[in-house]
Length: 142
Image 1 (cartoon, rainbow, N blue to C red):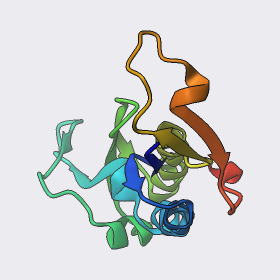
Image 2: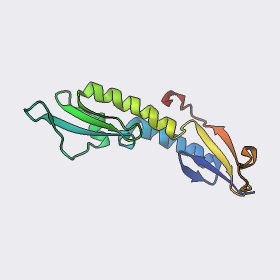
Image 3: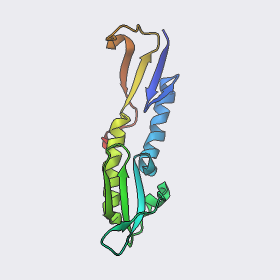
Image 4: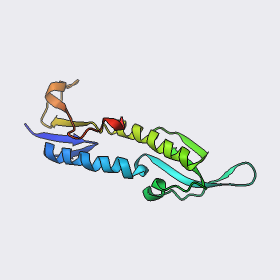
């Protein structure tokens, strides 16, 4: 039997390596919003519309928005695109979209996978994988 552990789409040889990745994921969720949101600074075009430059803000810029500027946001997973938002509204969307990302990445679960499991359809779940809770509580991201 060959066993691997999968966390957030990354395959590991040991459970300890997968658990260590949970700490990395927690840091990503707190500091790297460009994984789940694109933010651009916008300005009024004077005709009731918005001028949107092609420049996407970096993680650092998103984490330190300017209260005097307006922004456009796009959710990478949810498909939502909003324009003319204040920094406070963008911060709220960053938090909202982070939950979508965390849920999609299954941040609370490590999967133990038997890579030699039979390929019968449908596979017997008990032979193919087992869900293991992470050592770090990631439930606040769901």
